Amino acid sequence: MEKLLNGDYRSSVRNRKLADMFKEVGLVEKYGSGIRRIVQGFKEYGSPVPKFQEISDGFMVTMFNGNGSKATAEVTAEVTAEVARLLPFCSELIDKRQLMTDLGLKHEEHFRRAYLKPALDAGYLEMTVPNKPTSRLQKYRLTALGEQWVATADDPS
Image 1 (cartoon, rainbow, N blue to C red):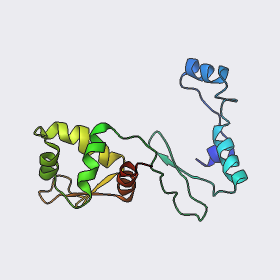
Image 2 (image 1 turned 135 degrees about the vertical axis):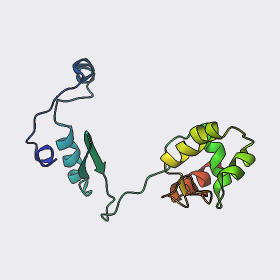
Image 3 (image 1 turned 60 degrees about the horizontal axis):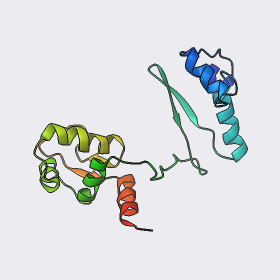
């Protein structure tokens, strides 16, 4: 990571055809310059430089807002129709069975795969017992991001 951030690394292309195509259409200026340009852009804009951390085969980037805290996500991501149907039912603590009943669903695996997991993964819902996802006491509630999405979806303007 240190070498990457200092520019003391050698870029390696994993898919030459794809990289060449990106370069040809102007999406890549030159190989290996992206991280340096990102950091420079943040500095020029007056924003805190992102934090880069190594994770397994790659790295994670955390961006911060102007006061140094993690930037809050804007509610711009599109959600699936299933998640959009689910979220309004989660304004108060609710369990899986009640959600399935409210949505008129009977197949638990389909509900989990198409509704619940995408909403949890996207950060719109959270579990009340996160350390025990299959707990009989498990309930779900909207996160701040989920509340923002519901408010935005309800607002016709």
